[in-house]
Picture (tube, rainbow, N blue to C red):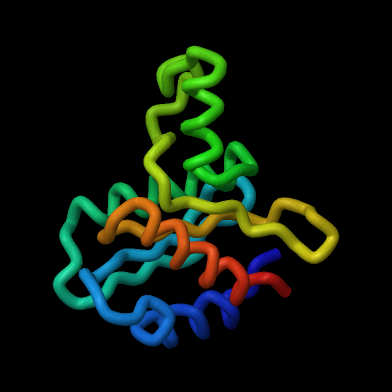
Length: 131
């Protein structure tokens, strides 16, 4: 389980974790894709919220990063529509959160910068969420 105190701590340190650059949105979900926490830096676009939510949801539901999910779609000649879930995305920036034993705890995602930068920050935040 991802603890609320861990989420709030990571959110409190977001400016430091993110470093300089465009403002970002961060979304954390449980293993079912339900939102546990969301925050945004001043100046974030409203579009970034939708993307962060979709990335975190997808990472949690699929148990893999959105980048890996995108690779699967390409490799298996699939589309998002094949999964019958309009909340999913394959845009890089969402990562699963796994416990020390490898169990899926949820997903975390960042939106607002280049996709690779979003993923790198999501990984840093995910580390902070592991109990």
